[in-house]
Image (tube, rainbow, N blue to C red; front, side, top):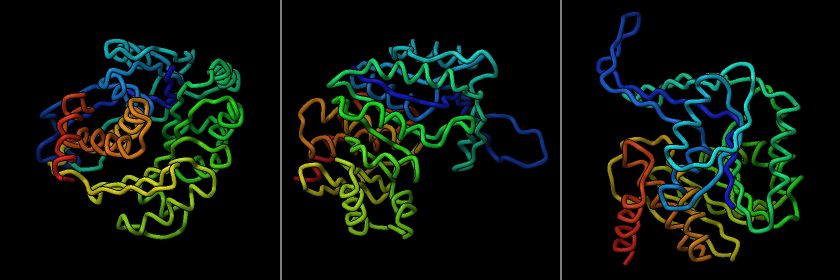
Length: 305
């Protein structure tokens, strides 16, 4: 079984406004409402590739109901724990001004609710795959990823961690199967700036030495690097295409990598599937579907040869 955890999911309201002006009433030119959160994105892309998963985390209020409803329509199983007070956050994303968004806070998570999630995770078995992705609410302890890893350590569960700085660094001793920092996050860990794939390689190897089995570094327009458990380093440029929407591209890369790994147990193939899925989402208005991912993968293989 495959599980994704999104500690602070959202209902994403994505709008474009031509000629946005401050201090005036602006009207949208396009609107889109989607379930959001890094783990949720992973579940959606896995589903698009024909791989079922169960989404875990916390939802609250009418917005939480809508997140669950939309995920059900997408074929994602609902394992969310309901919070009685507050509501799942709404994130406003303004497409027409690149990178501009206002993210909500989300409900407070009590110790009792967190323990209920931990009890869910206790049910995972050898061979299961768990994705831990994204930020955590302010109400939760900052070592929660570490506690999850500690609880599952030695159980044969393959764990993927896509998080920043301390959330990521603190789990390395528990040997996650895959971690996916981007080049900026990787540079932040080591106090340096990483601009090229060649510059990323030694630092990816350092994270492997500290315990991660596979280190996948996404680098936007520069491509990606994988320091793999087989001791090899794989790197590739970004495929040709027009950037339409970068939201969810990193999550798509993680989903594509694990889909490729589950299919063939081959690191090079998984790496290229990860790049194909991440790029296909970046080239699309929505998270990529199978046909888009396969088309990018085919193009990559043709360019490689």
